[in-house]
Structure formats: C-alpha cells, structure tokens
Length: 218
Image 1 (cartoon, one colour):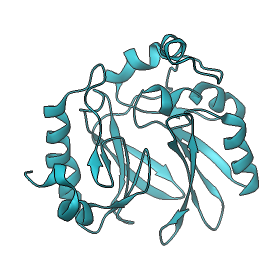
Image 2 (cartoon, helix red, strand yellow; image 1 turned 60 degrees about the horizontal axis):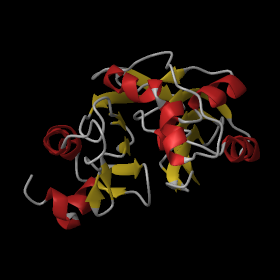
Image 3 (spheres, one colour; image 1 turned 180 degrees about the vertical axis):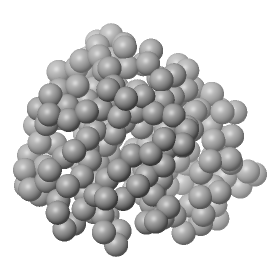
C-alpha cells in the first residue's frame, strides 16, 4: 500500500505475471480510479468493496494482456469508462482474446475498446487531482504514463521499474524508443518523484538515476 498527502494506492498483483493492478483514491471521500485491471476481477472487486471505494474511471497504461485483459468486464461491472492508452496500442487491445489463447489464460478475456484514447498532454483526474498524460513508447507503441505534478507521483506502467526498465523484446517493442521515453519524458520529471510501476515495488526517479544500470548512460 502506497500513499501520498491526499491519495492512497492499493496494489493488487494479478495474473501469472503478478501485474500491479492499482486502486488509486482520495483518502477522504474514497473516490478514485482503477488502473490496469489485467485479471482476477473478483479479487479486484472485493478490494474495492473492502475499502468502500467509488471507482469513477478505468485507466490503462498500455495494451498488453496482463494490464488490460479484464478491462471491459471491469468497466461493465463498475459502470465506468475506460481511458487510455494511446491509440497505437489498438492492435494489442484488438487481439487480447487471441493472445490469451496462446498463454492458456484462465480468466475471462475480452478484446478492449477504450472509450477514450489518450494523447500526450491530455489530462485525467483522480480524487480531485490532475494527472497529465505522457506518451512513452518503447515497451509498447501506445504506452502512456500518468503524472501528477502537485503530488510528485507518476503511474509508469512497464516503462520503468526498481532496478530495471521495461522489456522491448516483445512484439512491437522498441529499445531505442524506450530509452528516448526514459530520457526525454521520465527522468526530467524530477528526482523526488515517486512512481508506481506495473510489476514489483515502486521507487523514486532519483533512486533509479543513481542505482539503475539501465539509466547510467542517459
């Protein structure tokens, strides 16, 4: 569980990939968003009920199956809209069912059609706080990051992790694009920025600049 001065995050590792489905919400009024519902929707809904949350939207960082497989079902269950990612990930979201067959995925999977594609500079709101959208291709072509300047908080999906960076050996991945996204979009956010990532523990940009071997030559 991570927290800021006004927002709280509950991480729910889901699927065989242990992807951090995230509940991000205002600690006072319990209104918030569901980020990257990749699988195990009953567990996600149980956590929402446990924390007595009012989910107002679903945010996707990108279109890989472990981040989006349950998005359509979750949107229907919660009566909310899906925002993101950037439209270059449409082929990934259009083929989730096909991808699931290759992984022998156990959960119910639907291809995903977001209600709103997001672009660089778009804004999204959670708990009365404004997040700006950064288009950060590399791990996938339509990957986006959500950044709240006021809270110095970033939701980075699979672009950056504690001690490593996102994979680029998957179909549509591009190492040069990922390094450019890190150099031009992520590192300039500031050393004190805390980030929640798609797998494992989060960190700060400053810590990763000092210790992450993939960032040393950027």
